[in-house]
Amino acid sequence: MKIVGITGTIGSGKSEVAKVFAEEGAVVIDADVVAKNLLKRGEAGYRAVTGTFGKEILDEKGNIDKKVLAGIVFSDPEKVKTINDLIHPLVHQKIKSRIQEIGARNHDAVVVIDAPLLIEAGFDKMVDHLVVVAPGDLETAVARAAKRLGITKEEANRRLSYQIPLEEKVKKADAVIVNDGTLHALQKRAKEVWKRMMEKEEKGKK
Image (cartoon, rainbow, N blue to C red):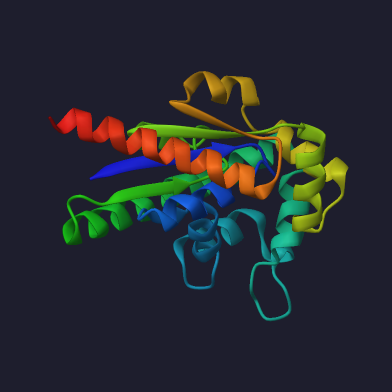
């Protein structure tokens, strides 16, 4: 079994690359989805976050209001660190368990971890190949992310500031996919990277 990590800046198009890898046969684990599920009532993440940030982050039904939580957290670097320290170990544990389940069913599986904070959370230590998706124009990527998340560009830039700079991520990458054109061009580049990774794996087996 091989594990591939995909990361990049917000709005870089990494999830589109993950989709291509899934079409090629990979099993994709979306770290954002794992984290969101951990914030559901009854989950360990819910208990940890509400225990730290209090009832003010809850809606009228007692669920965590993610917009309220984000507004509180991203206004203060210390609070960003606090929530990351609470959630990242839980996400790591869930992903590790999921990988073990996949491996038990198929020893030859290729598992993709799609995570915006893959390096920041230390998940890069779990992967055999690290793919970084870099936007051709960071300003456009930020605007795209802001629209998708329903936040202002200023808020999106603030969130970006808490991530490792793109150039540092690129230095750690085994492959870099630059997203500076059409969706079709991005998909084509993703397929080329997938092909190179699989060829490298085949050579390693011989």
